[in-house]
Structures are given as C-alpha cells and as structure tokens.
Length: 285
Image 1: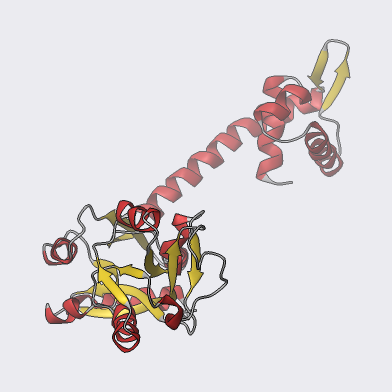
Image 2: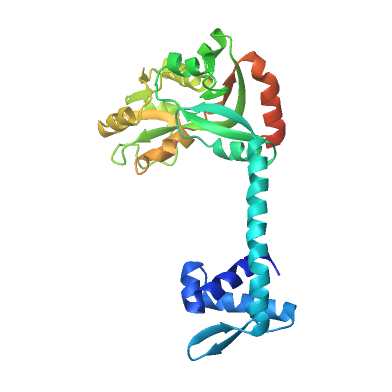
C-alpha cells in the first residue's frame, strides 16, 4: 500500500463515486477500482459496498477511513515541514541570463545533487557594460555568456559549460534556403550579419569573412533585428541553440562546424563556488 492509494481512497470516500473521482483526480475509473481492489487484498477486508444509491463504506472501511485520514493529514504536514527545512538550507546562486540557452539542464543537475538553488536573473540590457555590471555590483554571482575578449580585459574569469555551433538563419525563400548545410564559401555575395561580441566563434567567422571576402556586418543581438535581417532577404549567423527559436525561418548549420561555447563569467573569488557546482553537476557533456 502506498500514499497515492491512501490519498485516492480518502478522495473516493469523500466524493462518494468512482465516476466523479476520476475527473477530480485526473485518472480513470478503472485505475481507481484496481487500486481499491489491491488495497482490499492487502488489508484483508472490504472497504466499500455498492447500492442503487451509490458507493458506501463497509463497517471496516468506515473505521479504516476514520483512523487513516488524520494520519494522512499528519503525513502531509510532516512532508511540508521537512520540505521547508530542506529549502531553508538551500544556498541560492544567482545567474544572470539574457537569452534562452541549453544550460537549463545543467542547472537542474546542480540543484538535484546539491543544496544549491539556482535563480536565473533576466538581464534587461543589451550592452556588455550592462551585463558585466550585474557581476560588478553583485546583482548576480555568475553571468551566463559566450567566451568574450571583454570579460578578460575586465578581470573576470570564464569556464565553458556547453558547446554549440554556428548556423545561418534565413528565409525559406532565400536562394540557400533549401540546403541541409552551408559551407562558408557558399555565403560569398550575400549580406551576412552576426552579433557584436568578440567571442571565439565570431573571431572564426570574421576570419572566414576576411579570407573569402564575405560581406559581414555586426549588429546587436535582438529578436527584432534578426527578423528584420531575414525578412530583408539577408542572413543572420547565430548559435544553433539560440537560433532554434526563430523557426519556421530556416536554421542551417555551417560546415565545417564553427564551435560556439557558452559558460559562466565570474569574479576570481567565486572560483571555489564554481568548483562546487561543477562537482554537483557531474561530468560535462
């Protein structure tokens, strides 16, 4: 017998009907009847009898209900109290984020295997000054970011957590819109845009642009900017994970792959805390 069966038994008794109970408990009448059958076999006595007027408790079932209901309420109270103690001892870590990424699963692993609670603080700014300022003034403990030249010049540290790759975002009507992958040489003659950060990925992209004479301009990252670029028939280059939100626009990987890493920026004094997080999350994938 388990707590779910007991909870459902009490609910069925209070409601007085399997049919009505299945709607409230979001399960099926068949599943509820099987649970009651299992309980009766384990208990050794019947819990209900049925009449033309509905479902009723047997004498044994009535005594069981009277004794088990306060115990079930006490159990829930104990669970809530213990959960409160657990949450009170959680250490909150604030992480600044400015775009959707695939690091959420990494945060969940940390919370699952430690006493850390991850709070994501959404950045409302688009400039590096604003985002790095969240670290400087203590608004956040870490900043989720791509590797960036500016973070090192400001004395911050960086640790890669996940690795992605660059893709082209373009209209399905674009001449390259039917490709499964795009080689940098195929971008020649088209207007290209990418974000302004000087990360290793953008440096690699700019190197291609210089060697292949590609028309590449940088504009601040924003949803509207990317939509405007694609609607004008041009191409915006972004990481695959970030680009996925722009479908049904075409998102086509660049081959050979241009790696794009994303991780955490932090002050040197947070190194110890980061190492605890890394141990909690386990091996990086």
